[in-house]
Length: 149
Image (cartoon, rainbow, N blue to C red; front, side, top):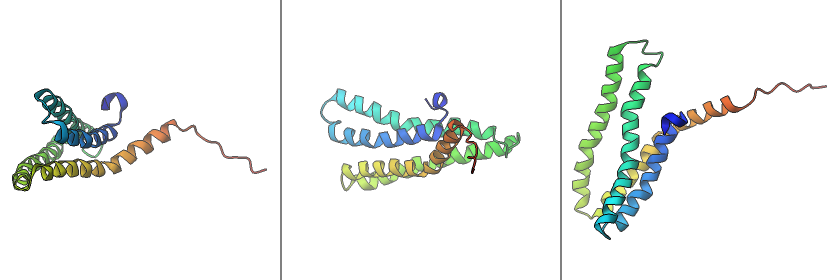
């Protein structure tokens, strides 16, 4: 989807924001039946894992072609490791917080997940604005100066 639209940040943020109602629906209706649980878990996982996969693979590949790296494979490896390492830190902290918050109730855990998705979407906002401004500058026709006379 992001390749087709050439809008990776917009796609990732859309998925992150779509994961919020998906997680809330899962919390409310996941216990109705096994089929509802499976279906809502698949939808929630799609919306959460989509941006993660996009960021760790496509963004790393885009960075490899960035002019500031100029073919420096060590710099690319460092940037890729930072991106992957940040995800690993989140994967370590998430279960720790989940264990702590689950003692207060599962609503707290789901609010943590919703808040995390919301913050991730907000952190993508500068990239979204950049993509939108690039698109609008490409689609707007060149305006000629008006004749003042």
